[in-house]
Amino acid sequence: MGVGKVDNHYLGKGSCQAGVVPMQVHEELLRRERELRRRVDEVLFYVWDPIGVSNDPCARGEYTGYVAAVLDRMTGDDAEASVSAYLLSVMTDSMGLAPDEALCKRAAEMLMKHKRAVENGLA
Image (cartoon, rainbow, N blue to C red):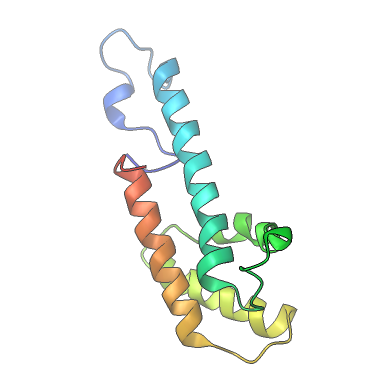
């Protein structure tokens, strides 16, 4: 079951009304969404960190503003490439830094690994 998606097992079968998600399933989906959001924020800060602030606790929220856009790009067959391209664009266009494709690719790979872990309940 993917984050933000409801497994068909819970729709229209048993005592559940079609389209109605049992409360415990809804709570689990919310927990997984929060966990993925937290992990994305951590990967951006500790792995991607293009301006080198991860050693400063006062800068912990430096990349939080990019989390939603990264999450939006973490779906589909080309998700990893989409995330990597977005991070590269932020680095070069928004931050004015020299491009570091390897850094963006490494961060995107790590983000997708975390997404799979959360989706598989390994969070």
